[in-house]
Length: 261
Length: 261
Image 1 (cartoon, chains in turn orange, brown):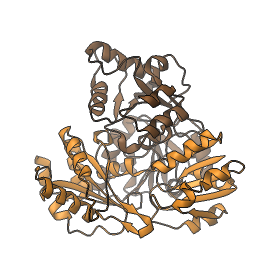
Image 2 (cartoon, rainbow over the protein chains, first blue to last red; image 1 turned 180 degrees about the vertical axis):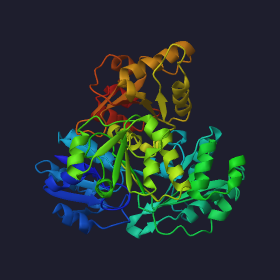
Image 3 (cartoon, each protein chain N blue to C red; image 1 turned 120 degrees about the vertical axis):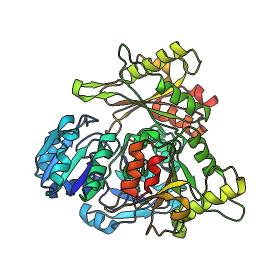
Image 4 (cartoon, rainbow over the protein chains, first blue to last red; image 1 turned 60 degrees about the vertical axis):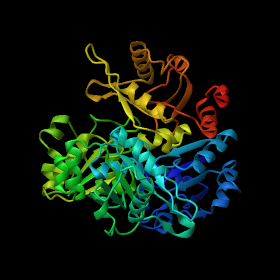
């Protein structure tokens, strides 16, 4: 039996009661934090609360040694991941492998940035287009795809949720400042006039915590603000309904001029 | 103080521990189930577990009498909603009203169909376009907008999550069968060749429960299948990565011919 359990967005108490019950009942509890991780709270307190030991697996132990599946053949295994389970390809692979082997699986969902970020910004989830992720740029690696996704969404008036690279093994969590710089650098290379320092953007930091930060302003202003600790993400709004614009003013301190645009 | 607490997808234990703690600590606990509701478990057991009374509000009490905000001025109020909070416009309005009045708010997220449905179908969340909802058709009300959203997404190779109307006050929860019929009726009216009985579709029923149903097949076949109790939703896949197609076969019983398409 394999429980795929989402830990939710921020701290060790974002897990659901169903997820908590699964951990308590499992023979073995694994977790992976290389695709995403929690920044609030600590896992020790979850271990104490549930009376279990949580074994944190490396990428190799998950993807090459297949430890979660291997032990689920004759034990009850709970495999914990940050956010909603099955968001990363590697989690879908585990689900499919388990099914192929006839191992019973139970998926226990949790909060996800996909619905949390729109909600706390006052933007309507049904007005978002495709999500995109900005990768950490390297010497020969600077894909324009996030910009293109924003462009495609904008053409249909849709908002874009822009996630930011996580490289947990290097303790690297892209800041919103880096993400905004990335997008403006793509603009400088393409010169299509999609984005500029005047473009309205929203930064969401520490979604799921008790005091998440929502800041809406022109990209030029946001570039130099300090949004505090990780995780960050960015939203590039498309066409705003008046109530959404008002939401960005009230919840994100956006300039009131956006109400007239 | 106002806690906006998500109950998650299916039963009374899909709430997070943080959400549960908020309920226990609140002076007054309200819930609304007209925008969405839980089909598993029961609220009485949550009341017993938390040692509180949960007062279920009507639309009028929420939107006209503003009960959650009115009492949050001098008490700790927890306002519970199914799914992730802030998905419905009315919840965003409450958040904004509270902020305008200087009432401290804490948002406690929970699982949402937006990330759950893609995950359990083996489809990648980042390959979804805009979400859409099919309304219950009436004599003079049969909007083509869901079809148009699918069309826009398909043009970019993206999957579409199609939510189905909920009219809780009439105890009406659109079935996937009705939703598929709706889409084919739009096709019959528009004759654009976007959809047919041969189009691959995915039905997800009771997401978040211990045994959710995922069925992937041609629309013509799905039309007459029985997917069991609510809630249902539909996914119309765009371009499938091989692993996604394999996922639909393994997780949804899709015909293996889709692996060669």
